[in-house]
Image 1: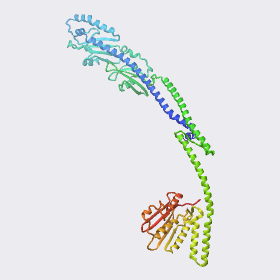
Image 2: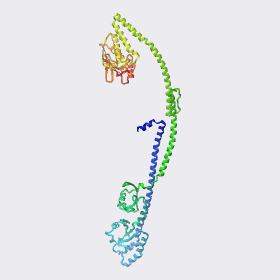
Image 3: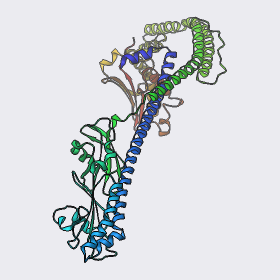
Image 4: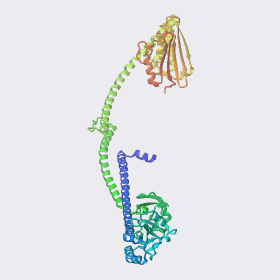
Length: 572
């Protein structure tokens, strides 16, 4: 993953832009193409299934017509008043019965058989009061206990159907509208193969994998064009009886079409593997590919136009930057466009203009600095004059035996040497403490030794550096605003320096009256007259960071403690 990302980062901006356009554009195009292909394939599948449904529906209508035909034939027999009269009359003479059977029944039954070629037998079963007559009239005793459809025929008044492996029967009771004592049953036996002949001629893709069959309400197979697929067909019968089903059977996905027949107890089933449905998606694939190629070609053209328009302006800006890099700083760079590239160009022009101003300003400041250095060089005479003067006073004082004057002059000389520090802003902690001690000694003489001083300094701190003139202002404030303001008792000044793990802590304490609350809140953030702590605090934070500086703890009437913290710093 890191290598492709590294390659992408090192690509030219134009290549990145084109690649980004392609990725952003090709993904929806690919998704749209895939969606269109799948929808088209689904549409073809629906068409194929609809074609199968139409075909199976046509076969079902053919079976319905044949079923209705035989039910009408049955109705024409049982509702025939002439036959009802013959079968319902108690003949006293067999001669009259034979004559009616010969003249009326035989021609009528022969006509019906001739009109229905797949009818094997047409028989009326009558009680023993009616003598048997060939196959046309038989005794009901033949059926009692021997026929499975007899009980159903005796219980229902409508036309019924019965089937087994080799037999297909249509039966119905004669109505008792004209003759109440009539118990006749009409029996039609059909040729099963001829009856389902229209279904057996259906061609299949694979005789072992698709087929057609009819089932009844008890999940029995009435007819099947594949007798060896009974177990397989039973699994299909168990499926919900919807017009179309899909099911996974033996690892193969099948499409099953179910059509109820006119006989309400029968259903026509047709099944075929989904993969065997003829769905030629070649034209769809070609159309999808052509559409994708056309979209990509148009996309490339638009990407090239957009990228060339944008990159051309970036190249121009890059060319101007190279001229500035090679030293041509006097360019007038501006753009009339208000987009991001236009804003970048205008801001680069403004930056170049500002740089030219700063270069001029720095050049002028250099001249001023040189002049200031020259004046400072001249002013160096003054410190030397001061030190020489103090040395003469010291020598004169010693000559006349004024040791106090000599001590003050020596201390004052040492104070100025450490405080001036040869113009450096940083000094060692040792020199800063020596400078502070010199200042305290001078103040002690000036105050006629009216206050006591104590020092508590860790030796470790002497190896570090600090900001020049940072402790002396704290001591000066303690003397001026603390000890000098004390009315009763002797003043006490305590200077403590402790070395911690990562920082140094300077504490200057006095037993003066303390600092009022309103002054204490502003003493480090405002330029308070007479204190001057704001400058010291800002210099410490500027050099060492915001976490360091001065903290003031003062309780009015109890004294003040000023704590300054700095890191353990050594000047490089």
